[in-house]
Length: 350
Image (cartoon, rainbow, N blue to C red; front, side, top):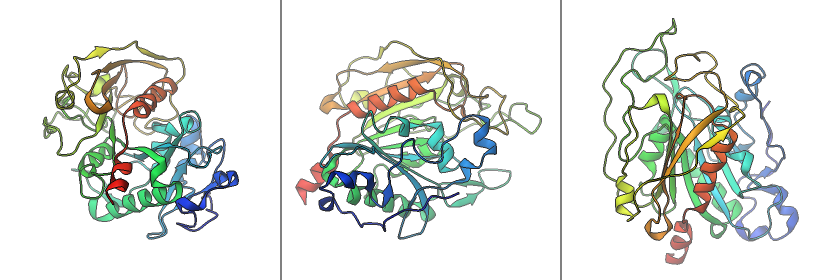
């Protein structure tokens, strides 16, 4: 069942939220703890939660999306905004469980918006799948961003991150330096959605065939190995079985004058993630049922201007196994510690 918003878009501008009570109803969305429409494991596939498109409405299009934020928000408090994009064939609430940053919205002071793509289109052979399309979705993503900036206050968003899984990651890479986002976005978290300084996918990357066997090997177009025109922090996370190898260098680390790559302590989770690909689990490259796990974390230290460049490889994992609690929080911590400020610079320039 879809949740109803309580206020129209834009009803709370930045200057309007001066009373503590306003923290309970921001940007037209009533806050809730625990976050709404949550599920765990097989219940996500059978209970209907993933069909819920959201608790917020883009007033310009009427499209639903999820908006999660701290319920104890204080006037003038600084926040990190994450626009969290699902991959092809998925929906917003699956992504909200795959990368459950909303679980840490109170602890790390996050605003997380998680939309659903409008287009059912083909990607090679086979039936159409839901996927991000520039003509159908880019304005919607801008509308969501403006709703957050108006509702929470531009000056209160200390940093803004795009996070995207698979085709959502490639969409993030496509829009991060466009005319609208280039002076707003401070970082891109790629969740198996491409790396600047490519980590090539294995030849048989993709969902299994109907009988569960691996897909045919095929060549894939390379990701660019030079950084985009605009500057932002870059974190890449991927399952071990998805890629041939993780590079030991990074074009972004070179651009920002970071030090040589350093391996941090492994991230060990004794709990599984929330979701997986329920219909096609089993082929290890694509992913199995969500399980506890271990991840190797690498950072390029001492980057100029407080940028963060990092890689996290989830060992014994594939493309669709939901992120475990500790690895999710470690990614959030990296995002929070990275320098932000593009929105404040834009405000000063206006």
